[in-house]
Image 1 (tube, rainbow, N blue to C red):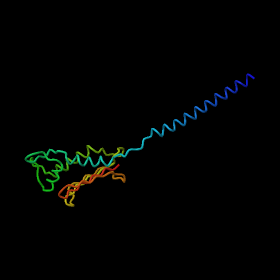
Image 2: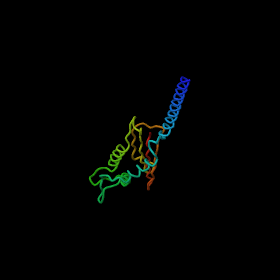
Image 3: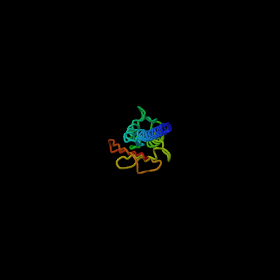
Length: 159
């Protein structure tokens, strides 16, 4: 009779151990699903749009008689072929400034979240600036900005 009690106690312990293992596996599966966050878009629409708005307000080192010019004013002056106070061509300053801003803002590479970008500025249907770096993919976010005097700005970030 004593052997029967020991065997039934052992069977109950094995059953209890199996239940604990099953519950632990189920908890791990649920925990895995709960901790897995949905993948965030690499680049959001508002980031691209905000970037365009920000670089238009950026103050350059090009001066006219009264003030340092913003990129937006530099675009207008480039259209008219004007020069900076120090004699530099406004189109060259615009090109250099925007290259610098875009390269610093959008880190492009094969192993980076942003794979490439394009920036195009057109005035009256004529392209005055085109910047492109990296790979063009099918996954992209873009922004279009229309300024007075038929100035169109297109920026696209590819991920």
